[in-house]
Image (cartoon, rainbow, N blue to C red; front, side, top):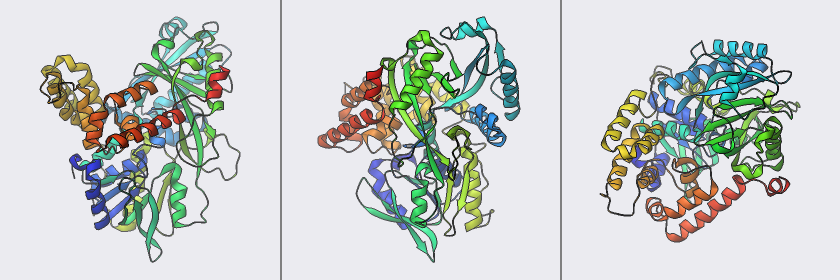
Length: 554
């Protein structure tokens, strides 16, 4: 199946196929782990289906720190295997998928008598280079006090002795997840969102499928498969309890909160990592997309999985840490432009009183007596390796290893090779230099699929579109709605739209401005649009607005 059927209009056809065919593998969960298993299985030639209760990357995989890092801080807890894997995966994807995973410089300021000493940082950096096989994007370097202040003039200068500049990587987490799902669809897989599992099907006490409720149509379907994988992250225990109601929980939730400042409010020219003066927890300010992303907290949250709400204590902690570290910048709640929180599905500590930062991020795969395979833990950067390990268990259960092709995800780019993407971009820049900057953004986000958007955008730019009021950005809206299974306004704005910002007001303005084309593409009437618009307003207020108590305090 191509991407031309990966849309809201085609859902009845896809769900009918889901209920009629026998699949080799059914994956529950559309985050980066489920998406990676899905893509790998499709590339191997399996008949594979992926179902997601909400939207792809709506949970942890769309609410992360947007870093694709090796895990420098895990070396402190002797997490050598995890760091080694993450570093090698980071380097692999920078080589294969540089449009999505981009190398990024980070500065660690060094102070006399506080934070880590130069000797400790030097040892840590050497270990980090060893973990990446000395194949990092660039070798780390130590800077003088003057060089450090030139790159980061907002740093307190009194006891500053220098800095260390090293490279990790950044990623748009929801785009990375969605592009991975799309590649699985291109290679024959079937994927559907907004379809929660309400029951597991069993034959002779073995899980052989699931009952799915399509939230768009209100219809219920049954899917059958030789193997079922539970890759639902923070919801993993819910699915496990559909199999065995009395099973002990595997997952414990940790919440991470992030703040966004405009670039002009932060007197830095580079991303930095520093220890909070409050409790010495590592924090970061990452420069990207005209903003600085700041975070993150790491605290246990005793609540039900769902969309996490930024808490008063989380935001106050981040602001106080920044105020103490950079007192002259006067960064308070009024300077915060956006806020979001995400849950991390960490392994249960079995009653141990551990700090979330010290709990392992390594993955665990559980195979229940019923055959249900559950995977929990892991990182954004190690998802490809986790997929390999999960599929080894799947193949062991349902067939021999020589039935399907071997894994190829280590050598196949997502959405085109770096060279193909560069050639495609160059072609359209020659055609229309006036839209060069926009074309560059499109190819970075959509790879070779940007060809469709660029062709339509150019027609609109030169007045060849039937709607004389149309803007080039309309072409992107059309593509996303027709090829990326966007079903709601929240899907479109939160996880698809590259043309929107970390700003609540701008998001709502753009929705109003594009109402007509969005209604046409998502098959909505005026009342449905208004209802979803109100729903999204509430979502922004609940999930992306500072708590009122914080605003009052500051």
